[in-house]
Length: 335
Image (cartoon, rainbow, N blue to C red; front, side, top):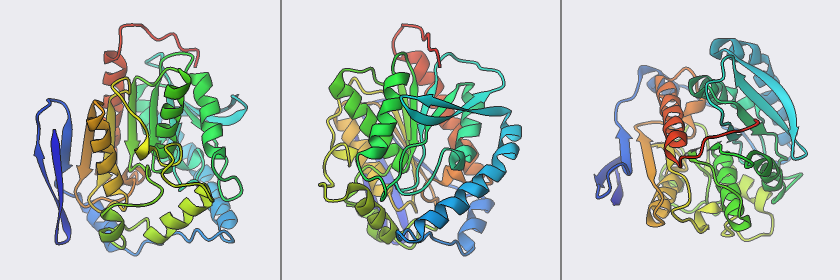
């Protein structure tokens, strides 16, 4: 399979030449009225300077917590807290559990902000659609806790979950952690998830790639400056091309699960999604890269968008099919 991504004035033109059925790029080419309205308004881009981070985190967490009852009611899910591998985890459960496998979910926020509760607009519908229990590690954040703290916390939970079959999902920085955990698990001989999805994955902290230039200012939610700042906080003096810091440079093979990767033509990290897709394809991994016209970084978080609901439904379907297709051994998960 060969995928061509070319810049054409203000839009991304995607042409695909498919040699392998079931692997490729899909461009969703029509935008909803809600997406147009979002792009028309002034959106505040977060200032991630270290002195402002504590207040920013507290404000975002308070807003997220206030929305918990509404989101739980709307999606018919309930929340609990568990300690797994010594790490606090938010556990989201459907009212009726349909499957015996859990989803290990990693939230985003550039490794410097975010929390499990703040990703509930994504997690709650994913839980409801799959009927699976979703486990979300509350990993430590930089700059107070630079690499490998977030990875250590995430992998401690991974070790516990990997006692049986599971699926993996991560958005933005969470996509980084999902990928890094898989690479680490491969090295240590632990099982890999049967299905995986990463949304606008931040998989190269050097922030190389064309979209980091041409989408800086077009993505209404993320800037190159903030991304570079967060990368420095997290990686510190370590080299950015280490696979456990930037999983794009990791060693993948056909034992890795089928991936669904989502992004948008305005996503600051569009290039990283494209490069990760090509990297996985080159290593023999099954990949479905979905590029949504006019949409931005982790657009799935914005629950008012029809595209967000559609994409989450596709992610749920991908996980459900992947968990059914990979191997014949049944799941007997205790989670």
